[in-house]
Image (cartoon, rainbow, N blue to C red; front, side, top):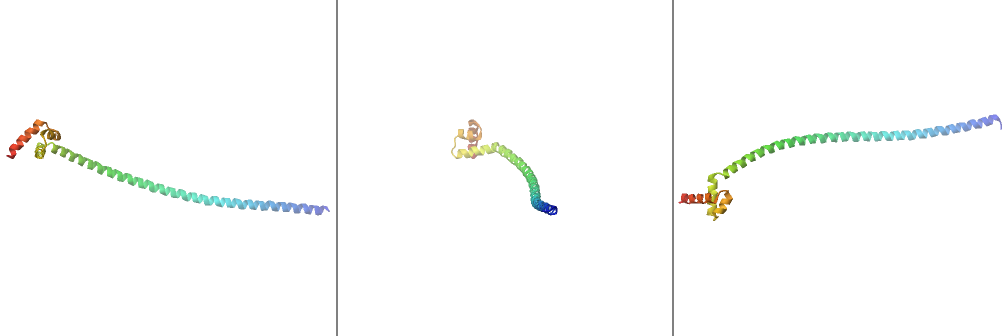
Amino acid sequence: MTTTNLLLILFSLAEVALLFVVVAFFVRLRKSEALLTRLQSQHEAFVNKLTFSAQMEQELVQTFAKRQQELAELDAKLEERAAELKGLVEHAEAFCRSPRFLRQVILAGAADGKKPDELAKATGLSVEEVKLILDQGGDAGA
């Protein structure tokens, strides 16, 4: 073999080796492009999920604010109602303690056959006061 043939074989082997290197480079380049494409699609999906989460959070905050406002309004109405009921209870207690009402309760209880000590316990009066009212009631009815 001559040196030219030997050089030709060496150059041919070098070209084949370079060809393999170039093919390997392009294969790796394709894999890198595929990975980059996959990362970009995942990034887009992640951004979409973040956007959706932000929208949901905004809706949640708005709903919470609305509920807070409704609760404040209900609290104000409840306070008004409590004041009204307190006034009614005070009026009812005053009415229940009025002499006229107590007299009617005692006379009605006596008409139902209740004893003076039971009527005294129910009205919060003494037995003597109940007997006095019953005596006066008997005179008023005659």
